[in-house]
Image 1: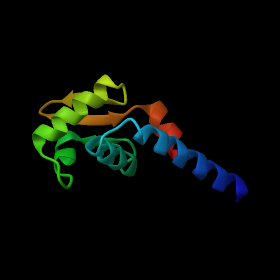
Image 2 (image 1 turned 45 degrees about the horizontal axis):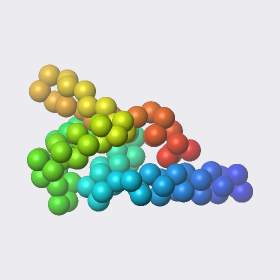
Image 3 (image 1 turned 90 degrees about the vertical axis):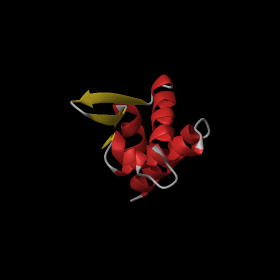
Length: 92
């Protein structure tokens, strides 16, 4: 029980530290990705509250430049994946 509490506390600290370097839209995207086990469609991100297709595209582009996510095309659909090392750190 104590170990689990310590692990959750460490995960929250890492997430808080990561959020210092992100704007509000990027924080929402990270939260959405974590809730969905690290992978969602780009269209799902554009449907988040307060998000438009253009804002989603620009935020994802910035996040790719920061090396936080990968965007992979699957035909007409683009999937967004949180980097495995980041997902592992956050969900520990």
